[in-house]
Image (cartoon, rainbow, N blue to C red; front, side, top):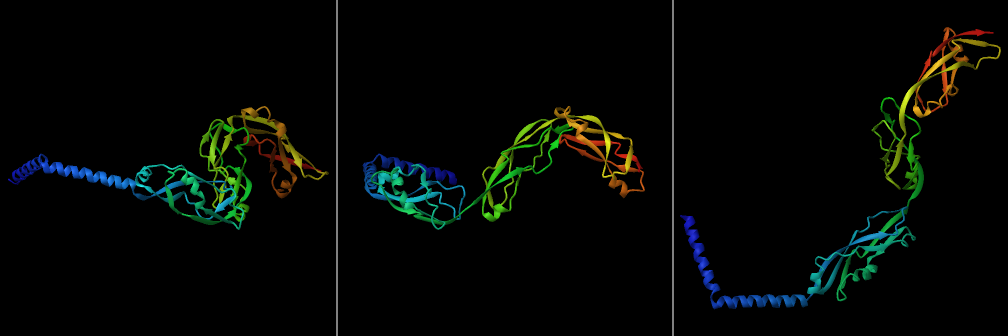
Length: 327
């Protein structure tokens, strides 16, 4: 019942509106409405108006070894004044970045000063000739700054490289660049002798070059965030050589005979170094001082001295020998 009454009310009001629009009064109303809008528009475009806009800032000429205590303003707010038509054109305008050169600003009392009013002409060049800048915010910036110390330090790996079975490193790890430059206060820089890389967790079965981030200490800056690391990997194989037992530190009037007089040395070596590693790289040593410290034993443990850095899993067969002391 209520819905029928509502529909009836809508129809009746619709008829009234239609009757009004057909009448002379409606024509008069619309005429004055359009006239009012035109008068308002003419008034608006001819009247002085103000608008607030922002322009991005880019600073150039800041030395790498300068640290500014306060954060530099990244945008400059300015209020401009002009006729309404011109002001409307700025509503969606994108202003070019304001470049401020600070090259000559770091030479007095360790205080940086920027007068943004000096940038008036650069801003005006992007505006209509009739537009006025009536306010800048900020108008002035001041901050203390310090000169940082620089120091070159080496970069080193922070963990043992994981290798696939039957693989070895056939050369040293290559880091490029080997040195990086630190920037910081003298106190913070003096405490650092080298920098570690982030841990390398990959398991390697072939030579590979990676980009690895540097672990950055607090309170300092680094001239680069990462370095290239080359891990030289190849397959390995086993090899055996025979070497004589050498007696050291025995008095000249004492002769020591060992049984056996030579031993085997078994080791793993990369394929590229297989032929270059020979018995000449090894010395099996019986130290006379070890005998004196263990006179109740008839055997002594051998010491091994070797000169190649590319051998692994070294075994002495046997690792102990019997001996006879002859005067």
